[in-house]
Length: 515
View 1: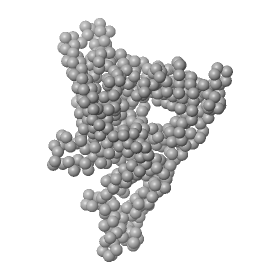
View 2: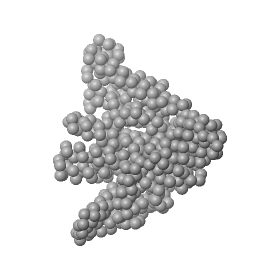
View 3: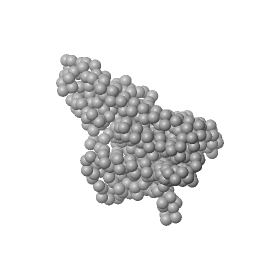
View 4: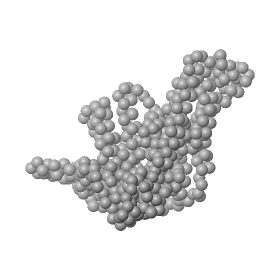
């Protein structure tokens, strides 16, 4: 069986989900030809007797599994469409003056200064005299709105409009006035409050950035800091993603493996990551990274080697099966495409750079180029601006963010330990502990200044505004992606078909390393 089957299945599902079922079936037909050739030689198509029964069974299973993936992608697309179709308001939309939402994500501050809420409608009202039930996904905007977390209910006043057909939500609510929040998630709020309180041990100028990078709370981030990351193409360093989960996993894993051993460290890292994702909110990018960690840990504990590309494919298929609506969000698309670019394109870029660029530079540079190549079509269409400085800027920003986060955790951790010891009647951390905390705090302030200074410097580089209608760019990117990833199989298939015309090709097992 082809070891790339999970990746092929994810590709077929993505085509059915984002492009069309026809495109998925066309690609499936091409891959079926490749399967026939790779299972029993290209002669299997011209002379079926040349292929063994086992090869034919493998080919059939190959095509059936990929067809199942196409159905899964189409099902996710239809579930999202039906969810929109079932949306309703008991009052005509144009008469709605207020609504209640049950939040499905934590609130967040957007670049315009408004607070964004994502949830599902539970009730609408017209003035104060008429209320009615409602349903469907909705996105609300309120300038100066309160912070709210997933699972809480929100009552807003404002006008409700139907969203565009290709939007991830059915309704948009432009709110005004005050918002009422109830049904609070006490444990989550208490834990977030404790972490925010621990951040007060950090130097004042670093607290907002630490809360943004570690807790995903960007409300207190200054306009200067936000603009520096945006203009340098480094906003991914602020949005909680696999980068942040990986930094945390590396820290906990290294410490635990030294104390407990490698296998026991795995049993500790996964629960820590689960608690962290629950605390900051299950965003698509974090769920992708968490599922990768869980699947990777399971395979490692079973002593099975699985490529990161196949792990990513498993996670993609699970997420579109369980929560297909998230596949329409920009964070989901950027998260998966960036990692897919790193996994599938970066090794080829690194081979091109090998011998020309030192490895300490070629590895992160190839990762940045792979991620940029995979996400550029999506960014061009959704945002309309490309910051090409983001590739070299990431080579500096990511290590600086890692250092900043580690130093911030050290200062906050020592602060929590000091308060805990004081509560037990012990005289705090002692001179040595206070000295270590002071050194870490000084390093944190320096890392903050260097990080923001570099981001501002990189942000002065010119950017490119892309025209509307980037559909052609998507198709070009998809074609290039397929050629880069499957060029060996396609080249082997074409060569085999050419040789088979002269009757000189004997059936044999496909070896991708020899192609």
